[in-house]
Length: 532
Image (cartoon, rainbow, N blue to C red; front, top):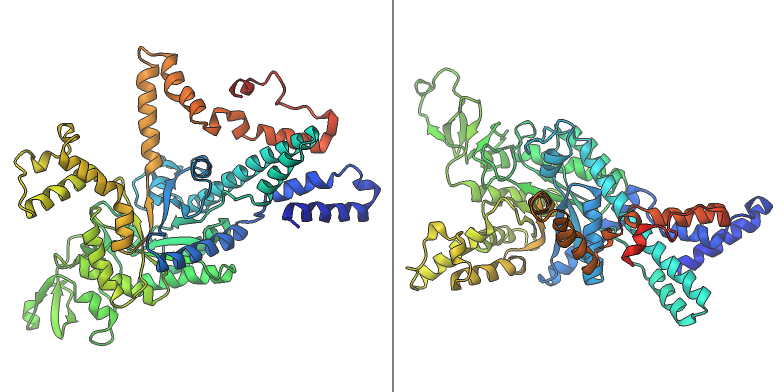
C-alpha cells in the first residue's frame, strides 16, 4: 500500500474514533496535506539528506564519473527554482545539491548591508538561510503535489481509470525537491564553543554537511583574496570535533564535515603552534615558518620570538601586525599536511582553495594525500573569482608551446580578447572547460563540484540586460521579448507567479476548510489563465 493510501486510512480511523466532531474532516484531504509536507523538522531533513550524501560518496568511490554538483544560493526562491528546473530538465534531483555561500550571505543578507567575506555578518543569518532554503523546497513539493492531486480529481471526475492510475503512480513515486545543502560556517565565528553552538543551529535548520576553514576566525578573508591567516592544526581539529559533537548530539550520526584548507594562498599565521616533541604536529607546523636561525642570545632583539624547530633555534619573521610569515613556496606542502591531518581527525571531505582551476595542480596534491588516505576526496570551488576563459586559453597556449606548435598568431597576455573566440586555441580551451568537472573528478579526486556565487552574477547580468532594454528604445518590448516570452516558451513555472507564490495551494486549503463556501482566487477572472 502506498504512503498516500496509508495516510488516508490512518486519518479515516482517527475520524471514526472521534465521531461527530470530526464529521467535516475529509481523510483524503488530510492525507494530501501530510504527504505534501513529509519533512516536519529541519532534523528530519538533515538525517534524510545525510544518508543521500553518504550513498553518493560511496558511489563516487566505486566510480569517479558519479560526482555531484551544486550551485550557490542566497535566497530560498533561488534554491527552489534551481531544483524545479533540474526536475523539469532531467527528471531527477539525484547528485544535485545546494551550496550555502558565506560570501553571498555577507554580500546580500547582512543587516549591515553589503559586506566583504570576512565573517563580519550576523552568524544567525547562516542557519536562517538554511531554514529559508528548505522552506522554499518544501513549498515546491507541496505545489507540485497539489497539481497532481488536482489532476487526480479531474481524472476521477472524467471517469478515466487509466489517467487516474497514471497520476496515482506519480504521487506514489514522487521525488522531493529536498536535497543536501553544504553549508559554509566560515572559520566558526569564534572559538570551538562558538563553532559548536552555531553548528547546532545549522543542523537543526536542516544542514547535513558543514564546511569549515582553517583560517583565524577574527582575521578571516575570502579564499580568493590576500591576507589570509591560518591557525595551527590543533585549533582547527578542535573545531572539527565541535561540529562532530553537534551532529552526534542532534542524532545526525552520519553528518558530513568538509575541512577546507586555505594554506595554498595563506602566507601568514597568528600563532606559533604548541609542540611537545620533535616531529609532532605542532613542530611540523612551525617548521614552515620563515625566519633566521640564531646561535646565541646576542642574535635576539627586544621583542623577538624564538622557537625551536628542526632541532635549531628559529627566530620567525614577525610583521608589524604581530603576524608571522610562512616560507615562500610552502603552501602546497602545508595544504597536503592540513588535508591528511583533517581526515585523520574526523573530517569526511576536503576543500582545497586554489588560485586557478587546473586539474594537474589539484591532482598533484590529491595524489600525495591519497598516499596516506586512499579514499580522500574533495569538494571543489569552481569559482567565479577565476577568469575561466583566460586561464584555459593560457593552459592550451602553454601546451601548444610545449608540443612545439606555432603560437605566433596569439598574444598570451591578451587571450581573453574577442578576436580569439573562433580560433582553434579558443575552441580547444572551451572544450577543456566543458569537461573540467568530469576530468577533475577522474584525475583529481573531486567528488563535489560547486559554483559559489553563480546566482549573484546571473542576477546582475539579467538585470543589466533588462535595464538597458526597458529604459531604452525597446521599452516594454525589452521585458516582453527577453523575459516573459522566453518564460512561456521555455515553460518556466514562474510565468504563473501567483501559482508559484502558493495561490492554488491556498485555494485547495480553502476548499478543504470551507467546502462550497470557499472564496477562491483561481476563477475565470484570474489573469494567470492567460498562460494556459
